[in-house]
Length: 326
Image (cartoon, rainbow, N blue to C red; front, side, top):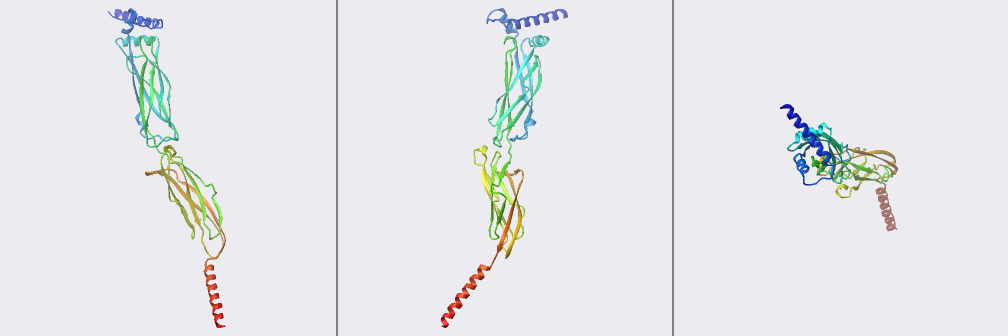
């Protein structure tokens, strides 16, 4: 009985292999071969999942590619799936499974590695691993819910006679993060020479390179005795990723002491500028420290104007008094 069963299975394998060969020739919809091949027809099924843990944290632009492990399971199903699987396995005929990215947001880049997987034809689940690499461009908006679509497609085996083409997709959702990045420049320089009664005015050009509306917090780190330093404390910048104007200017004014005598006062003023998300100051970026040098040089004559006015008035009074006495 055992020999008969083994002989029958061998015959079936040879028949299936013969059908696979003859399927390369011109086929007709009718006839015994067509009816028998339908009997051995097996559909491929896929079970695809990704590692959700890898996407618990938001993805930020300009960061390292996020690696997302993907597991692809495949099996064939049919009346004689076991025999079909044994037939192709004995001749080492694999199932070619193609992986590629079908849909992404315009500000996202995604790739799948490897793009082609050789899977054994099996009537039970067999799984292989792949990895999706996901990166965001600098114009990716923050706090967005987005997704990419991966296409999984297997080639047909036996010219669509035994195992037809398999096809499925995998949606991978993800969240975008916020990057507090700014650019600073001092177009008119950071060094000024002024008179003791003048004010040194510096212009700081700022640009929001991040992907969401950003607020800048600015203040002077040091104020020398007798000096006055004022700077715009809060500046809100729109985001280019949201279609706004990301550029503005911050004004810094430095006024030296105004004491009697000759001055040769040189001071270094440091200011701090820190970006943060407009609606949540805890999402803070790197602190930027800028240094400015102010030299107050020249004579200062405080009070002389008042004294001169008093003396002039007294002179006029004396002149008028003498005229009256005459």
